[in-house]
Length: 101
Image (cartoon, rainbow, N blue to C red; front, side, top):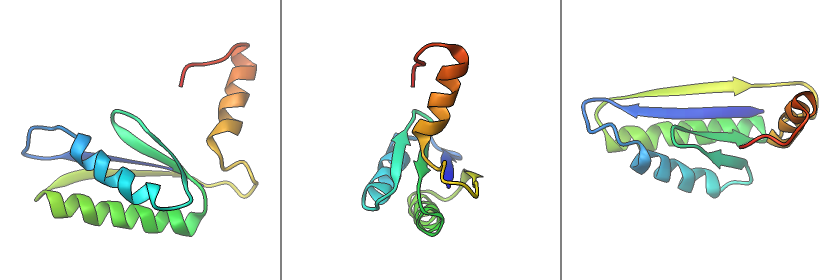
Protein backbone atom coordinates (compact mmCIF):
# COMPACT_ATOMS: atom_id res chain seq x y z
CA UNK A 1 0.00 0.00 0.00
CA UNK A 2 1.17 3.51 -0.82
CA UNK A 3 -0.04 6.34 1.39
CA UNK A 4 0.42 10.10 1.54
CA UNK A 5 -0.16 12.11 4.70
CA UNK A 6 -0.25 15.91 4.57
CA UNK A 7 -0.99 18.34 7.36
CA UNK A 8 -1.95 22.01 7.43
CA UNK A 9 -2.14 23.66 10.85
CA UNK A 10 -4.98 26.16 11.15
CA UNK A 11 -4.71 29.53 12.92
CA UNK A 12 -0.93 29.39 13.21
CA UNK A 13 1.99 30.56 11.09
CA UNK A 14 1.39 27.75 8.60
CA UNK A 15 4.87 26.23 9.02
CA UNK A 16 4.48 22.49 8.52
CA UNK A 17 8.12 21.57 9.28
CA UNK A 18 7.61 20.83 13.00
CA UNK A 19 4.66 18.57 12.20
CA UNK A 20 6.44 16.76 9.37
CA UNK A 21 9.49 16.27 11.60
CA UNK A 22 7.40 14.59 14.29
CA UNK A 23 5.69 12.40 11.70
CA UNK A 24 9.07 11.40 10.25
CA UNK A 25 10.14 10.25 13.72
CA UNK A 26 7.06 8.03 13.92
CA UNK A 27 7.50 6.55 10.44
CA UNK A 28 11.28 6.09 10.80
CA UNK A 29 10.66 3.82 13.78
CA UNK A 30 8.88 1.33 11.48
CA UNK A 31 9.92 -0.84 8.55
CA UNK A 32 7.96 1.33 6.11
CA UNK A 33 9.68 2.94 3.14
CA UNK A 34 9.06 6.70 3.21
CA UNK A 35 9.84 9.97 1.47
CA UNK A 36 9.44 13.43 2.91
CA UNK A 37 8.37 16.24 0.59
CA UNK A 38 7.98 19.92 1.53
CA UNK A 39 4.24 19.41 1.92
CA UNK A 40 3.68 15.78 2.90
CA UNK A 41 5.04 12.37 3.76
CA UNK A 42 4.71 9.45 1.40
CA UNK A 43 5.03 5.94 2.70
CA UNK A 44 4.86 2.46 1.30
CA UNK A 45 4.53 -0.97 2.84
CA UNK A 46 2.29 -3.19 4.89
CA UNK A 47 -1.33 -1.97 5.08
CA UNK A 48 -1.80 -2.49 8.82
CA UNK A 49 1.47 -0.78 9.69
CA UNK A 50 0.65 2.13 7.37
CA UNK A 51 -2.78 2.57 8.96
CA UNK A 52 -1.27 2.42 12.47
CA UNK A 53 1.32 5.03 11.48
CA UNK A 54 -1.40 7.29 10.05
CA UNK A 55 -3.28 7.09 13.37
CA UNK A 56 -0.12 7.83 15.37
CA UNK A 57 0.73 10.79 13.10
CA UNK A 58 -2.80 12.15 13.50
CA UNK A 59 -2.60 11.87 17.28
CA UNK A 60 0.83 13.55 17.37
CA UNK A 61 -0.25 16.45 15.16
CA UNK A 62 -3.38 17.04 17.23
CA UNK A 63 -1.28 17.06 20.42
CA UNK A 64 0.68 19.97 18.91
CA UNK A 65 -2.20 22.17 17.73
CA UNK A 66 -5.84 22.87 18.39
CA UNK A 67 -6.91 22.45 14.79
CA UNK A 68 -5.38 21.02 11.61
CA UNK A 69 -6.43 19.80 8.21
CA UNK A 70 -4.92 16.34 7.77
CA UNK A 71 -5.27 14.65 4.40
CA UNK A 72 -4.70 10.95 3.93
CA UNK A 73 -4.51 9.43 0.45
CA UNK A 74 -4.10 5.71 -0.13
CA UNK A 75 -3.26 3.62 -3.18
CA UNK A 76 -3.93 -0.04 -2.54
CA UNK A 77 -3.29 -2.72 -5.15
CA UNK A 78 -3.74 -6.47 -4.93
CA UNK A 79 -0.45 -7.13 -6.70
CA UNK A 80 3.06 -6.71 -5.37
CA UNK A 81 3.69 -3.25 -6.89
CA UNK A 82 3.53 -1.44 -3.58
CA UNK A 83 6.88 0.33 -3.74
CA UNK A 84 7.68 3.77 -5.09
CA UNK A 85 10.31 2.61 -7.54
CA UNK A 86 8.12 0.40 -9.76
CA UNK A 87 5.75 3.29 -10.52
CA UNK A 88 8.59 5.74 -11.14
CA UNK A 89 10.34 3.31 -13.48
CA UNK A 90 7.14 2.93 -15.50
CA UNK A 91 6.90 6.73 -15.85
CA UNK A 92 10.55 6.93 -16.90
CA UNK A 93 9.98 4.28 -19.57
CA UNK A 94 7.10 6.30 -21.01
CA UNK A 95 9.00 9.61 -20.83
CA UNK A 96 12.14 8.01 -22.20
CA UNK A 97 14.52 9.43 -19.61
CA UNK A 98 15.21 9.59 -15.89
CA UNK A 99 12.82 11.89 -14.04
CA UNK A 100 13.54 14.17 -11.08
CA UNK A 101 12.19 13.01 -7.73
